[in-house]
Length: 280
Image (cartoon, rainbow, N blue to C red):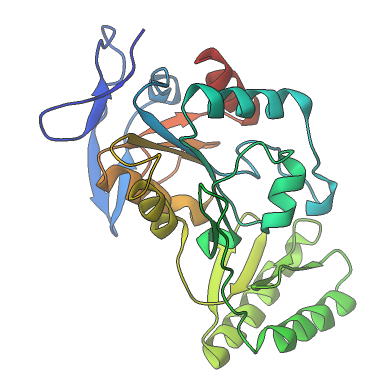
């Protein structure tokens, strides 16, 4: 079965490509790689458990996107897959998510120790070491402003994460422009980093992103020397796609095809779980 393997240029490719499969054509636009290929031809090769380092987003990748973030909880099949991956890959599995560390541990049943929470800002090391950064002092004021808009526009949902504040408009899509305008104004006034996502805008304490955290994990045991593979679905995952490729690895985009630094694609969460399970 074809697997991620290094070529002479340090870019990962299939070691045994099937005729007509995985022949990508690339272009550059605004610093983002364009995948010019049909969805069926973008499926990733089998994950090489012996040589890969696996980095996974959570919402939209391991768990379906839902209207209310608090409605996502543990799922036995997903937990079992992650626990077995951690065992078979000698710990070279990490979660890079926009959620808080506590939420990730709850949803994934603490199956994975290395975690970069809040989009890479809050990292727990493979040995369990955790030194969270200080939250930006203007976050309470931002939360109050977001709550003010949510009160005036039913359907908006404010999510506070300690190091960031998010305003979800999945249940009020007509408020997208107002949400972006409010967040952009506060980002300009405070220096907070504005992080757009799937039907959400987040303002977070400045600091490392998912790409920075992936690189930091790859510089330490047990990840050092492995082939990084990152799986994610959102624009917030682009720094991690780029970091994985820069370090000689690959990125797997989940969902609809779009301009991305990812090299492969899977259709949805079920496809991700099936792909991971097939490697075990």
